[in-house]
Image (cartoon, rainbow, N blue to C red):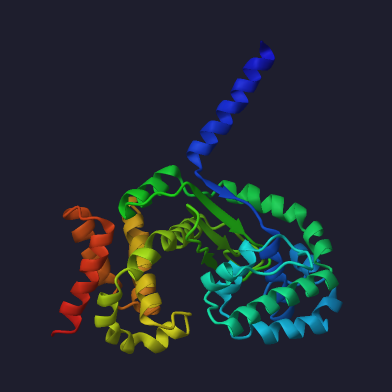
Length: 344
């Protein structure tokens, strides 16, 4: 009877934790390997005497491997987000020598022509070749304790069920799973994962600050709102091809500021405006007025998202006051951008 009671207690604890933390968190070897490759070519500013730095830099011969030079040559024109998405969906390295990236996956990543597909397949082959010559398996094993410590820390910071439900209610979309993939080796940033075939919102998370620090709760929650937001926002914004074409000239005044941040066209710029608008509104829902003020200041003035405040106001009007769907609210907001900014 005592054993049964203990088992029920454990199961109840697991259930309650799952209810409180709807997001899963876990490392992926392929993502850490990508970070390792980048670190070899472009070392970070982390303390070289930090235990993680010591393990990452334990094999200087990997840095001078000729295969590494070949990799940087092949991947030089591929944006970092695409590389993240490529590595996330590949089987875990080392790959079988017979492995060939599927045409469907290559096309999803933006490689459409025969030459482009051949290029990305060759890149995968060369990554695999470097993996087999590198000492990354040892690095991965040596960092196991640091990964466990990071997971313990992040599980204390996970976005709450209430926040996830607020996002689902606001965007009018739900996902079966929410996943956070931290990385010790990546740069300090976050990247969303795109896959039209699965009902999961995923983002990749580098350290929040130098020296592999993941401990800033507010930054972590904001990044979760932002990167999960891409799963909700991207397909909705991109539906509005006609409206985006009509407003494309609005990209001109901020193009130079956007390009250096990685947003090279009006579509991605608009996606970022709507994702960041969602951050502001979610912080309002949480009663974080200081956070709202800080986001508007940072994004609107410092990062030059000059249409942000307008979009926030319109989304609140259409979605929260008039109770339109998020899809209709986005469409009408982009139409209003044309009316206000292009017909004055």
